[in-house]
Length: 492
Image (cartoon, rainbow, N blue to C red):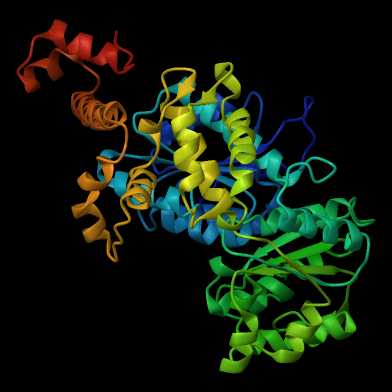
């Protein structure tokens, strides 16, 4: 039997004297951690709790409005199911919720990979600092609001390149129609932003906007996620559930990576697009809803049609209007504009910042395989690491610097190993002082990170007792105090 905080669940159904800003789900198998997080957050937010991933999934499924969970905070190391495994399944139920994971040193690489794959908004090392946690929660909820309530107008789609302006002109022309729209573009070009712009400029903007992320779904769940199911329709279907189509009634359904939908489900989606009718899994009753469908993909659907993996008739139904988004490498003149936009976005709490001319030059030479999303992540990284108001090229990721070195040297590489082997040669094409700073600061950051992680483990193993930790590490207590202060550890 699953165990979760029924008191919190009940509270979500009743009116508080003072409305809570957001709903946050906390998942941790250590009751003391749950209590600390609940105390930190409950003053401003509605807090739900569960003590493992399975119980948390049950909680989400039983909530009357699971999409109203705005943020999930989970431990990584838990019995029955890891934090990352839980978040992957929770994404099917609450795709818009932001996700923060609490982790120890041994899980560090796995969690960083999850962040790079956008499975996690942020991670925090345990034991966490309370002020840092509050800041992480604030950032996550701000990102949630930015995603769910974009600016009126399409100013948040940034650029002046003719190819982008043509796409935005198409948005303005077809936004208020009910016709299906297919948005095409590589990963990271802003397809979901276009979907939201179409919704925000339509007469349906006061109705629901529901997103289905097909790339995150296992094949067996597509039909249930799209159309819903009746209780008992399959193993694990413990209650009736609305699908995304029914949730979007009166509004707009955005199907991200529509080319991932299995052929058997494609036929049922085609019927819905033709007649506005569908059946839930396990039900004979035909239901009708009024929904506009906007879909997106980075794949070449005509090639998939020829290969027999996508229905031609469904393609024509989805593609009444087609909007093509150019990759960033085809609109490099927009890189300075975008870089400035992201700099202002990510530098909010630290006054005015700017990119050094060398930094911008290197960015303009890069092809950005991850497109605008990758540029945003790079600028955010630079803002987090910079210790001055001017962001120098030494803060750029190594992959960007290596690519810049290749572009100057004319050396082509075909493998990661080959690129790494020739990295020193590529770096020699950079200004010598820049190269020196890159090496020195990278070495220092790596040493500092190892030192901080060592201290965290040392203090945790000694119950935060400085004297005991100093004895175990065979160092003077005063020296350990200085190290702890240097890295921001609280000591009594």
